[in-house]
Every structure is written in structure tokens, then in C-alpha cells.
Amino acid sequence: MLGAMNTDPRLFVDAPLSEGGELILERDQAHYLVSVMRRQPGDGVRVFNGRDGEWRAVLASAAKREARLELAERLRDQAVPPPLTLYFAPVKKARTDFIVEKATELGARAIIPVLTRRTNAERVRAERLSALAREAAEQTERLDVPVIGDPVRLDALLDAWPEGRCLIFCDETGGVPMLEALMGVREEGGDPEQPWAILIGPEGGFAPEERERLRALPGVLAVSLGPRILRADTAAAAALALWQAVLGDWS
Ligand code: SAM
Image 1: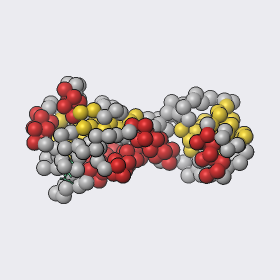
Image 2 (image 1 turned 30 degrees about the horizontal axis):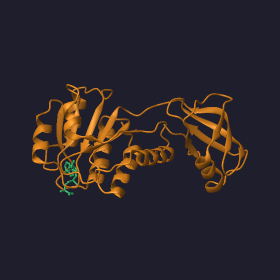
Image 3 (image 1 turned 60 degrees about the vertical axis):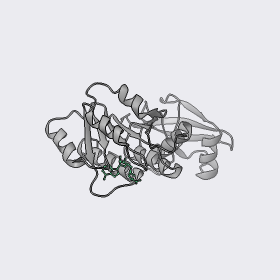
Image 4 (image 1 turned 60 degrees about the horizontal axis):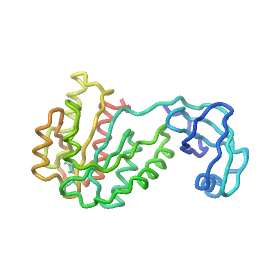
């Protein structure tokens, strides 16, 4: 659980973190600390790398292009969210950004764009989405940054789908109410440690042949998110929240 809100800025760093260690921050992060957050030498900064927990560091020297941090103490041990992957069909840029940001805040461990028949946003820039996910992880007190996968075609994903792996298929034409489906899994003692996945379609929804194939796949739970048609970004956030509440780390 989180302690009292620590207002020191948080940064993801791709470097080992250990007592007495030192970090050299490159230009962007130095600029953020010195020019945006107006931190000065002696101020505290929190750093995490997705492996060694969260550490308190002290800004030892600060210049516009480079800053040096000295690691002081570990504040939190490493913890990772449950093994939940969000597969989503990319939509218009701003809404795709929203999906990646909210999926990060809601604890998805991986976020993978899926190209379906009706996906009209084939161009997905993974490095841009990774930067969005990193920023969201920094701000949401996560200790890891979700993996942003390379776009995969739905057919290829299903061709390689591991036998029996559970896929929660959010079907806008209807299905078992998602909460009911998840409560059923929990009552049957479903293993939250198994790799779970949620699939959200594009603005134009799933094509009939896609729906047919998905519903025929063993391990697929075709679920409804209620009587209204939600936008893809709303559906992604709603499905992730429901999963975390029933099987994830909210309970
Ligand atoms: N034609 C609509 C549209 O353009 O908004 C439907 C597509 S909807 C935005 C995109 C995706 O959100 C769907 O493919 C589905 O995965 C999910 N979704 C939206 N509403 C849903 C609901 N009521 N039940 C289950 N999934 C839903």
C-alpha cells in the first residue's frame, strides 16, 4: 500500500539501483528535474527501474543537460501487478494515447495493439506509446512500466494463442455480463496468477468472422460491458477496472 503522498518527483531509470549508487540523468530527465520541477542540489528524487524497487535519491549536481543523483535508501520493495495483458485495436491517436495511459494506471502489465479487419489506425508508434506509459507509470506510483508490444494481427494472435489461456473478449454485440463472468471464475478458484488477457475492438467493432472465431476459441470468455456501446477507450478502462476489482490487486 502507498504511504503518505511523497511529493518528490519520480523518475523511471534504466540502470541498476543499489545503496551508495550514483545515477547520471541525461538531458530530458535533467531538464524535467531542473527546469520543470525546479529542483536544486540537495533536493530529494524518487527513482525506480522495474526491478529493484523504489529508491530515494539526492540531487547531487544539476545542470540543464545533465544531473547527478546519489542513491540514499530503498523506499519500497519491488512489486509487479498481476499478469494482465490488454490487447486493443488502435483507434484515433488521442484515444489510443488515452487507452495506453489508463491501462498503465489500471495496472496492465503489457499493452499490445491488435490489428483487426476494421482497425483504421494501422500506424502505431510503439516508442511514443512507451514514453506515454513511462510517464503514466511515474505519476501513478507504479514500480514497473508496462511493456508496449509491437502491433499484431488478430488472426496471427489467435493462431498462436496458447492452449487454454484465458482471453476476455469484450463483445459489443453482447455476452455474459463481465462482472458475472469474473465472479464465476473467482468462485471456481480461478488462478489470478495465470496470464490473463482482455481484448477490445476498434471504432467499427469486430467483423462477424472475427467474432465467430473468437467465440469458438477454448479459453475465451465473451463478455458484455452493459447495454450501451462504449467507445474503445471507455471499454478498455471499464474492463480493466472490473478485472482488477474482482481478480486483480484491488481486492
Ligand atoms: N460501432 C461502435 C462504435 O463505433 O463505437 C462499436 C465499437 S466499440 C467502440 C469498440 C470496442 O469496445 C468493441 O469492439 C468492444 O470490444 C468494446 N465494447 C464497447 N461497448 C461494449 C459493450 N457494451 N460490451 C462489450 N464490449 C464493448
